[in-house]
Image 1 (tube, protein in one colour):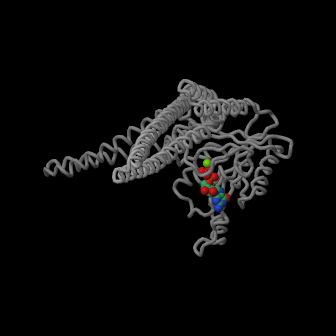
Image 2: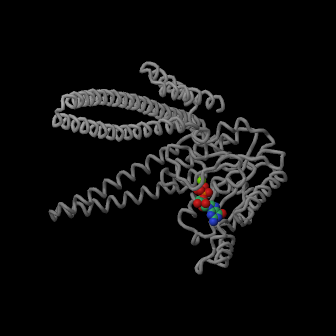
Image 3: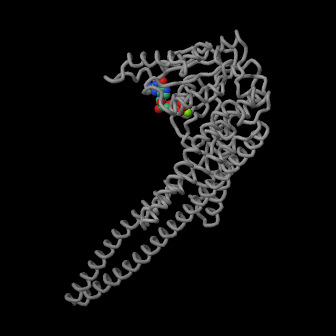
Length: 484
Ligand SMILES: Nc1nc2c(ncn2[C@@H]2O[C@H](COP(=O)(O)OP(=O)(O)O)[C@@H](O)[C@H]2O)c(=O)[nH]1
Ligand SMILES: [Mg+2]
């Protein structure tokens, strides 16, 4: 499995055991698209995927790191926002609670949090506000002095309706409204502008490191609640916020279902079956939503211990699925290689048959030509000029036919060669780009097997090209495997 995939499926938790006390851990939060991954990519030594939507099967707490001033390693934690289209808030909260809980149990603790907000966003959108609320509940007031509230996308304030002044006005509104950033700032959070450069990103991280040196590490409310107080997730402040939202949503769905029921009864009374069907469909959809909200509520009833068990089983399943995918891709690759070998063999057989046919026809024309020549000489000897002339014409006709045959065969041979080249090119491509070459630790083994199989077929069919190509693949796989 690829390193990147591995990092995603275990949510970076495995790495926690490798942390040392001197290391710095900084979490990045904010809605999807607020620039968390971009910020991390400015500093991180490893590859960071930007602007992508992770499939719902992957855990998206990701850990990236860099060495800070040659003294210590800084880990930047990329987290999911509470605005995920694939997952419920319950799932996102569980993911964060699990990761933060695991981090709390290690010797390294969080040094700070960076909360990103796009200054280009028109006021506070519903999802931004919701995400901010969840963020505050997760952190708690004591953690506020370790928070950097960062505005970014300043360079995008360059249209007649979206100017630098608009940005400044928005920034002021953010910090003056106590329910937005105002109270957090009062509690010690710093408000910073990020200009998108590496230097600026480093300065933001640096400030949090200095703050940690003065104040010690930060403990978030969710960590205290779940680990120290052994609360169930639904009883934590963040859990209660999600629970409140779910209860409200359920109530709304129930009211809508009840309204629809009345309209449905009315439609039946009026014998409007078409309308009744539409209303029934809408009711079914609402029932499903109601059920999902109920399930999300139930899923909040979980202790940290149970959460760990659940996540461990979930990750094991993901790893298995990814490995299964690897195996399937390799089997397809191998099947393609065997098929190309078969095509190549068939092609070579056709070329051989063509050559044999050409030889036979050439000999036949030669024989008939010689006979005509002999006839002509005989007739000339006997002074039978008319027959001699006819024999001469026969000979010329045979020569012409032979020439036409040679041209036709040359054309066919050319076509066969083009086809053979196409097969060769496909084989080369297949050798150069085996599926999941980087992803799979089993790939060299499969390549080796494919190479041996190719040369084996080559030997059996006395086909030197296949033997050489197979040996090439096997050698490639050995050198590639050794380098991984
Ligand atoms: N102009 C500008 N674009 C940014 C900035 N940060 C991120 N982006 C862009 O915003 C998009 C989403 O960024 P990403 O880092 O994936 O957001 P995430 O979902 O929070 O990880 C990408 O297309 C980035 O190139 C920034 O500071 N300025
Ligand atoms: Mg991201």
